[in-house]
Image (tube, rainbow, N blue to C red):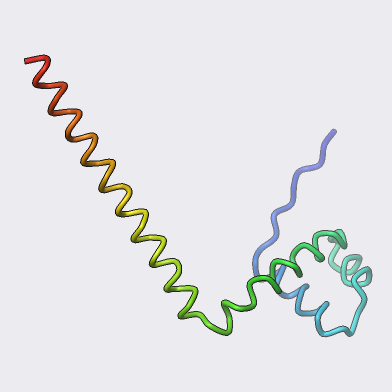
Length: 95
């Protein structure tokens, strides 16, 4: 029988990573205390450190998301034009 996959909250993951970064306890001590595998904590630490730049420059991250969002909106508009054109052509051919 397989175990159900546990989903941890962002707050919980952050708490464990910060506790590990403080260095007061070892990785294995933290893992056993919270009943989490050490590999999970290592993965969360890597994600945390990879994204630490966003905490220091939130405006940069927001700008990147806005740029990506505007590109996606532009693509959606292009697709809408194509669909509209094809719909008109289909109706003309049927009529």
